[in-house]
Length: 309
Image (cartoon, rainbow, N blue to C red):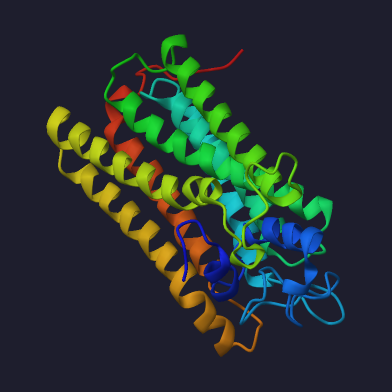
């Protein structure tokens, strides 16, 4: 029976699920007999632990997860432009906070490319460390998303120390805590967060809460707060459609990743999975959030043209 915090179903049923890299290292260190023929050889093993369908590691004619690699590369360029455009809106409310959110999301993309691209050997220290840092940045990114909603209420003035200090502190705390837990799961430094018992269940409640529950909670709270800000404080309707669209795109990205990934993988004979569609949809959601933020800060433009010295 599957328990709360078990990653076994995800690592076998969801292709390119990055946190499985952590459990691969854990199983390899403690009892590699858990692996089946697909995962038994680290040099050729794809992302996952005994996956039913997965993209082979790059090399020997295999390109790895090339579709998601391209999607991540294009997303990096697009988010880089969003950061540039955000920086130019010098008088917009919440500019610094929204830029931090974009920068954090930007940093997750190359790590996602490496942790799911089937380029690095499974169980290697490099892949394990990259995956742990990736997990830390993901949880910090969702905190930054929620914090942007809190800043939008103007409980504290945006761009000030009173706003940026807790913003940065909790972002750093989420990053540090998640990265440490992820590393402990993989390397069993303290045995507090690993190994799983039994090992085959790939269980880690702390990692599951931070990487699966926390993002969903942050998104829901963000949408609730922004609904209050847009409809209750600003008495606007049009910007709300941007937030609804962003939420729909995010939900579709998760449905694609978790439900259609294996279907696409089987349908393409282990050449492509649903991760590239999920990446495109997630990045599109971030782009729509930029449009939403821009629409509620239009009146914050300065009348004078800014000329840097």
